[in-house]
Structures are given as structure tokens and as C-alpha cells.
Amino acid sequence: MNEIMEIAKEYGIPVVEDAAEALGSTLDGQGMGTFGDLGILSFNGNKIITTSGGGALISDNEDYIKKARFLATQARDNAPHYEHTHIGYNYRMSNVCAAIGRGQMEVLQDRVDQPEV
Ligand SMILES: Cc1ncc(COP(=O)(O)O)c(C=O)c1O
Image (cartoon, rainbow, N blue to C red; front, side):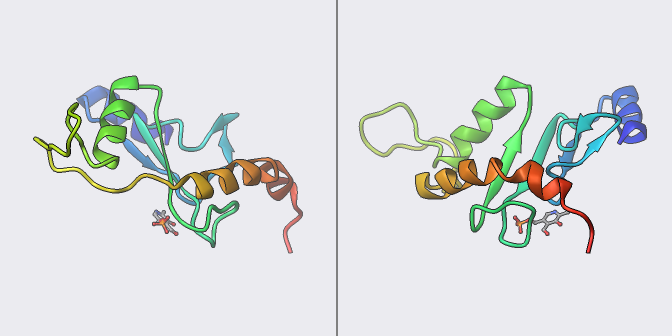
């Protein structure tokens, strides 16, 4: 990641870091998923923690997150009726899955600390 980010910085390339399987792991003390301009995490059932499906997009760039949230929630215009001037998606995580995920976050460190079998 350090080499990728160095090259990306030199050439002005935005990096989307696919950390789907890496939640809970670190490199030089920094959490995986936090190196790129955007990071993605998977909460699919085969991952270290799960919401049954879905994942998360993470960034410290508020504009990226605002845009992603807009696109992921059908890209509705600010109108009392359904009106769209952008193509949007229905990618929001349900409240129920999010609640499961919040509970799962509490066991993340235990899972990381588990000895290999
Ligand atoms: C590196 C990587 N990217 C993306 C994915 C896809 O994640 P999801 O199953 O949540 O779509 C996986 C799943 O295993 C993965 O390992």
C-alpha cells in the first residue's frame, strides 16, 4: 500500500482501496481500508464480521461520502415526489443489517486476536 500510494500521489491518481477481506488488520499501525482515498470493506457472510451481506465505503473525504450516499440512495432530487436527474442505485444497507453490523463490531477485536487453527 505504501508503494501504491506513493505512485498515486506522484501522478495524481485517486485510489480506491479494496480492503474487503482486511477489516481488523493493520500495516505499520494503520488500519487497512484507510490508505486509499476511498476504502471498501465487505460484511459478506464469509468475512471476519458480517451483516449477512453488503459492506461499507470509508473515506475522510466528506465530498466523496456525500456523493456515494446520494448515488446509493436512489439519487433522488430534493423534491417532495420521486424526481431524478442522475442515475442512482438502491445500495443502502437496511437498518436491520446495520444493527447486526454494530453488534458484530463489538466482537471484531476478539476475532482478530483468535489464534490460527
Ligand atoms: C478482495 C475482495 N474484493 C471484493 C470482494 C467482494 O465482496 P462482497 O462479497 O461483499 O461483494 C471480496 C469477497 O471475498 C474480496 O475478497
